[in-house]
Length: 73
Image (cartoon, rainbow, N blue to C red):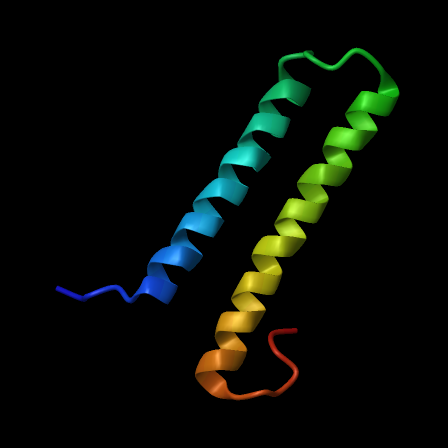
């Protein structure tokens, strides 16, 4: 059994919150809850930004574990 540090718990919670937001926007798009093309584009942009945030979290973790190199490619 591993013991999670405060930093580990924080990272997991941030990931969970980001994933919930992605799911919310995806649901709105797929269920036709958006009223205009502008709303659709906005939701798609938010999803892309949230996915980029998840990628940056992974890059930060990689740098913390393996050094200050370029991160993942």
